[in-house]
Length: 580
Image (cartoon, rainbow, N blue to C red; front, side):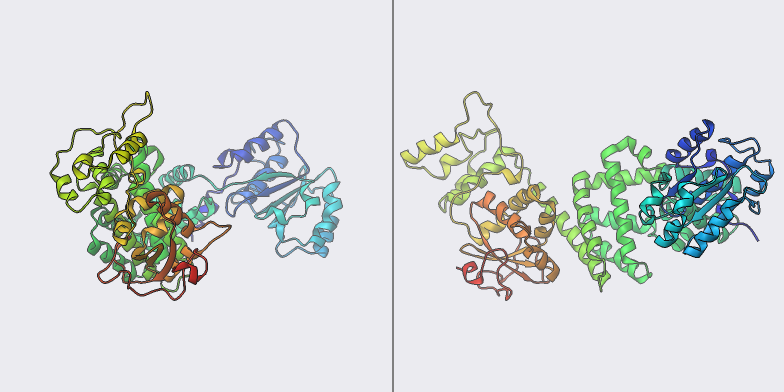
């Protein structure tokens, strides 16, 4: 039989501790300057070195060459408290989970009275100290407050807030933390070299991620992989299967399908996730992790290797190609959709449905983002016709299309305005005065974004609402990202006067849309965006319609006479006022 890795490589001095310099350095300084307290409280997550540090502190205090910040490792006390030692008679480790009452506290008080059998101090290490009852702590209070000179207390706990304040106030509190991934990755690489174990690329980052910053958990997982590997090599495929993570090839397949807007490949990959028995929530979490890596690669370029440690150059090159196919902005939008899906999957009865809806939303959002980029009309040439076309008579569009567009247009001279319609003299002067730039201001081209395009004149119809929907969503994204995510999946059904009927793909989206808190919510945010773009304040009828049709778009037959929602309007007051 072999000893577990975390026992074979348990640190024997503060210098061997990793990722806990905020604890080890002050303790070593106190030992060097002979300013050691009589009671210590070590707190932090499980497996981060609290009990190990308590044993190291006991070795430092009782070392024959001490008290010292570096135990000699050869005296009887150091050997007994080392990795293979059987324990010291003067260092008492108590499991507070099973010795937490008043009677146990009384027994400890009686033992503390006697002097050490051989060493300098009698040290009591209380593990899981938060399990001690208030009565037990109160029975220990006098002893901890004024112990004999030869007694030291070390409390170790994962929940320091459960240790009563009168005890905490009499201790030196040292908080332990989880080890950062970079330090942990370097540590396990060194350990594998010492063990003579070969690991395939990508295995150790998975082990570090699964360990969650706990050295003990990380070494336990690595020990399990080494024990289950053939010929001394830890294979990536076996590590993925054992740890439950998604294979990198499957993540690449999904990301490439998103980049190419290939619905067939994307849904085929989702089917593989389900058919192979993987946890859909874990898959979404892994996909979010990959998107984070792509965002880092897209934003940092050559500096990505310094952030994404443990990733080979070939993997970085492949991720660079994937990031170039999206861009940072689109990757951020997809990550927002994935995060929302991860939240919705908590307690969901049909995680596969949530997963497939996420893919559909990502693909739909990708199509919407790519659509405006197709025609290359130029800045002012594209913006000006959209600003005047709704107000022009019927022949205006053809005349407008035939009129040559100048290379640049100023706000005072909109493109195609003279060809479209000749306003009366009074209107012309008012228009010129309103559109003239301020004195000394440089001439400007078209608005910088779709959300800043001029508001066209004329009545607002359902067709105009659908045509202006990208501008509305652009303005909504500036107001609230969460409201924008919700409205991006909505479909315009009809617009009767000021009553806008929207269809959502799920009943949950309808409920979220109707939520209001202190006069704010998705419906009010969308109302503000519509008012800013089209100049009207709408009421809503929100309903569930899984048939879809695309965000903002309509389906054949959906119009003013389409079906109404029985739930009534959201955010628009009573039903009678909403449909006036």
